[in-house]
Length: 251
Length: 251
Image (cartoon, rainbow over all chains, first blue to last red; front, side, top):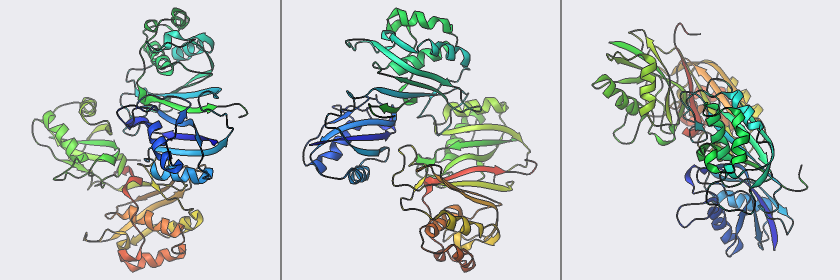
């Protein structure tokens, strides 16, 4: 048995998310179903991030243990030949036996895209959140800065999902204003781990601040409340992209 | 009665094309159906380019005669509120009574996008032609140059579509190589008019030349043949974008 690392890109629009579900088509299910005939038996694929329905990936990472002797490049071609065109395998690499896409991950990077214009482009509406009212970008930038570092992010966690700790470290967070009248503004965030719906709750809260619901100085109090009700709305899934996952011994 | 000029963007993936058809949803049909309740009666919308099924537009232009007194900005908002999100009205302007989107047009500009890489991105496959074998970009550039100027383009016209003249002028034609390993290469072409399927036949023939089917020096002979069979294949619709339409008294 060897372990392979898969790097994946997908348009999440038509899927129930990463994780296999009783109903609907999942990315995990597509990969496991594509690998089964190659392996000659059932395989389990682990993903670094369990993206929700409608969430996209530019660099999701998955791991799988296989006995099949196929070269990585041949496996990549075989998978891309059978997967739907909105799910692509960007790379297949041999990994250490102990490699696990989720448990070995050191950091993850996400983008959240927002179109702040009266209308959203015909080519963007499935890949961005359309916020028609003008945003106060300076307020968003100030509020985002307060999230950097190690914090208890319980205020930004989906309710009903108990985890041992709600502390996480945001290593980098940046709001890049859209270019031109209708170019998307993008929230870039990288951290050592994310709670369920955390990026969407952060993006939604930043937009609420950008629309004047709270001043940016409210952000420390929102964090300190450790209560989902203290933060803003959850941004919709179609603006969220899992961009990259980092592992030890990688630049 | 006044004449209005509409500038439109659309993702053509789900449509039967610009022109209203007995079956399927057309862009013209969507606009006419959206305008009818505003006008209080049937309206006819004329498009500058009759884009085929699956072809996209970044700057299609349409004209319509209306008696309704709505301000252009209010009309734009009303249309965008009822049209599907993959069809957007980018601008509405008052035009001269005699303005006609097709007959008044002086030039049209198209882009044809090609991904020349082993795999095409999950986010690109509906907006580009995937050509996996490596293209000879220098050969394509040389062949494209031979098309510039006034020529009889009968070799690049869909068969069975008689027109009074098959002479057209290509004012500008440029092949821009894709950036990075998988960025799309783009054919930019602007001319005073285009025969049916002309841009797709040009793109397909350039790709055939880029794959070595003919040397680039074959292009003048292909033009001189005035026979569709002398040129290469027709490129698929999803790579084609109607970018802009030019009118007198516009820069």
